[in-house]
Image 1: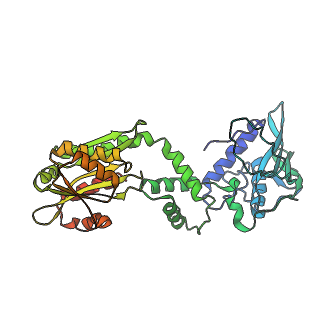
Image 2: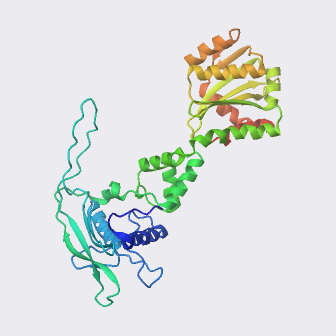
Amino acid sequence: MKIPRISSVGREAENDARDYLNVAEDSHQFSPLFQVVGSVFPGIPGAVPIDLSDPFIGKHYPTVNAAEHSFRGYAFRKGFSIRRNRSWANGQEATLMKRVWVCSCAGHLKGKQPIEGVQQRDRRNSRADCKVVLRASKRPHKLFPDVIEREVIAFKTEHSHPLVPGDGARSLAAYRNISEYCREQLIKYKATGLNVAASVRLLELDTGARAREFPFTEKDVRNYLACFFSGEEEMDASKMVDVPEKAQMDDEDFIYRYKMDEEGRLEHLFWMPGESVRLYRKFGDVVCFDTTCKLNTYDMLFGIMVGVNNHGQSVIFGCCLLRNEKTATFTWVFETWLEIVRKPPVAILTDQDGCIVDVIAKIFPSTKHAFSCSGHSIIPSFLRSTHRLPSMYRSTLMLSVRFQ
C-alpha cells in the first residue's frame, strides 16, 4: 500500500504513517474503521492499542496517527467526517510538532470564476464554516521523558450543520474503503463472471457481514474493478484468441476467424470444429441461427448455428462471439461463415431482427429466410439435450464457456 506523504512533517511523521498502515493491513476486522486507532507501542513488538473512547483536552496518544484515528472514530460515531487542516514542524530537526484536524464542513468554498464558452459542473457546496476542531501537540511522557506522545490541547465539538443519523456515516466518502482481502475476493468473483451485485452478496456470506455493513457501496466496487481491469483490456483479446488456437492444435480441421477494433480489442470471433464443417456439408440444408445468450464478463453476444441430422438429433455448425447486433456485425459473421463452408443453406431460421433480414437477403439471396417462433427456447432446449451428443459437441459448448 502506498504511504501518503505528509507535507512539512519530516521523517518521524512518515514513520508514524508507515506504522499505522502496517497495523491497519494486519487487522482483518470488517468494521468501517477497522477499530485501529494507534500504532505499535515503543518497545513492545506487536502491541496494538485499541482506543474507542472520545478524545478530550489533556488526552495523550502514542503517535499522531493514533490521535487522528481516535478523532476519526469519534466523528464516525457522531455522524460526520474530518480532514487534516494545518501542521507545524521543527525546521531544524524536521519533526512534526503540532497537527490540527477539522470537520469536513469547516471553512468556506471559494466560487469558481466562470469561463466564457465553457460549461462547468454545478457541485453542491459541502462547506458550512463548522468550528469543530482537534489540535494535538508533541509532548514528552510524564513518567518516561524519552517517550514522545501527542497531547490534545484543543477540542471543540459544536457543529454548524446537521449530522448524519444512525449508521449513515458509513456512506460518507471519508469512511468508504475496500480492504485488501475484499479486493482480492472481488477480483476472483469478477473473473468467474459474477456481476457486482452478486459479488457483494457472496462477499457478505464469505465474511459473515450483514447486508450493507461493508464500508463501501456497489458503485465503489464497480469503480475499483473498472480501474483494476483497465490495464488488462489490451491483454484480453490475446487471451481469448489463445483458446481457439489451442483447440486447433488438437483438431487440425478446427477453423476460426476473429476481428479486432481500432483500439486492439477483440470485436468478433467465429469458430467451427472440423467435425462441424463435415456435418454441415451433409445436414446444412436448414440452419437455425440464435443470439439469445450473452456473456456476463465482456457483455458480448453468443451466437450458435444449429441443425438436425438424419436421426433428428441436434448438431452444431458453428459458434461466434459478437460485440453488438449491428448490420456490419452480422455481415461479418455470415461472410466469414460462407467463406468457410462455401455452401449457403437452403433455409435459415433467425429471430425477428431487421439487421439480419437485410444481411441474409444480401449474402444469401437464394436462401429461404424464416423467423423462429420459439425464439428464446432454442438454446435452452438444445443445452438440455447435450447429454445425448458426442463429446466433440460438448467440448464445443465448453469452448464458449471458457471465454467467460
